[in-house]
Length: 482
Image (cartoon, rainbow, N blue to C red):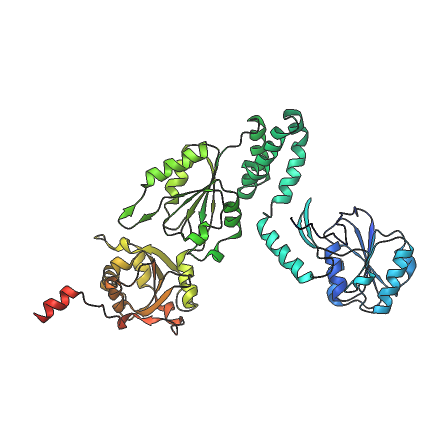
C-alpha cells in the first residue's frame, strides 16, 4: 500500500497585496531581508524602526518604500495586509504578534515559529509566474537550495512569455475548443516557437511567432539549437544549454561529447550520433545538414550538441546556412571552448598585461600548407596561440613556427581531456613539442597552448614533455638485438 502524503500544517496561498500596506518592524539585517522579499510585490511597503541601519535606509530610498523612524506603536498596524516582526527583541516581537492578531492581521515573526501565522517561502520570481518553496520554517536553507535548482531550470524570459500569453488568450479561446486542442496550443506556445523566439530574439519576434502558431492552428514549427557542450565536464554546460536539452525531442551529438553531458537531456529524447573523428566520419557534413533540416521540417525540437563552442571549429556556419536556406528557425548557444578549459586546468593567463594582449585560435592543420598563415606573424609578435586537434601534426606546428622566427624556448602547455577528471597535463617548450606526435598513450582530445604568457602557469601538477620516452615495439626490440 502506498504511503499517504503527510498533511501540511501551513496551507500555501498567494495573498493579493497590490496597493495594500505591508509593515516591516525592525531596522537591521532581518528587516532588510523581509523588505527585499516584500519589495518583489506591488504592496505599499512601510518599514518602522527607531534605529535604522545604513544598508536598510539605502534600500528603502532606492526602492521607493516608506520609512518611519519611530518607536513601536500598535496603531500603525491597523489596515495592513501583513505584518513582519523583525526587531530582534523577543519580547517586542511577541507584543507585535499579539497586537497583529488582535487586529486580525496575519503576522510573521523572524526566527520565532510559535509567533507566526504564516511562513515566508523562498521565491523564484518570473512575474506574473512565481514559484514559492516552503518548509514550514523547518529548513530555510533547504528551501533556498531547492529554489536555486528551480531558478536554474526556468528561463529568465518566462514571465514575459506568460504576459504575452495573456494577450493571446481571447484569440486562442475563440479558435480552439476546450480540451486537448487548446492544451496542445498552449503547450506549443510555452515550449515551442514563441518561447524560443523570446529567448533568442525579443518580444516582437515572440509575438510574431505566436501569431504564426495561431494561423497554423497550433501546429508548431521545428526549431534547431546549435548548442556548445563545453570541453567535456557536465557542470560546465550553460544553464540555457541544459534547459534546451531538457525539452529536446532529438539530440544530434558529436562523437567527442561525453555520455554524461548527453544524459542531461530529456530521457525519452531520440539520440542521434553524427560524430566525426579523424579518419572516421559516421556522417558527412552534407548529411548532417540534411538531417537537421529534415528534423526541423518534421516539427521537432532539436539540439545539435557540439563539443566546446559551436562557433569555434564546429562547422556551425554550414549548418546555419542550411537551416536558413530551408527557412528553419534556429539559435546558437555558446559553450566553454577547449582553449579556456585547458587554460583553467593549468591556471594560466591567456592574456597577461605587459606580456601579451592578443590570442589566436587555430588547428594544427593550418600549418600543413606551403604558406605560413597570417596568424603566425601574431605568434611571433607575442600572441598566445591555442592549437586545437594538433597532436598528430605537433612536429609540423613546432617546426614551422620556429622556422618563422618563434623562439624554441617559448613556453608550451598541453592538456589531454581538458576539464575532465582523467585529464593529463604536460609542459615544456616549443622545442619539446614534436615529442607529442610520437606519444601513443594519449587517446583523448589534446589542446596545446603556446606563448610567453604560458610561463605564468602552474606546472606543479603537470609532466614535462621532454621526459617522455616511447616504449619500443617488440619488432623494434628484435631488430635492435639482431
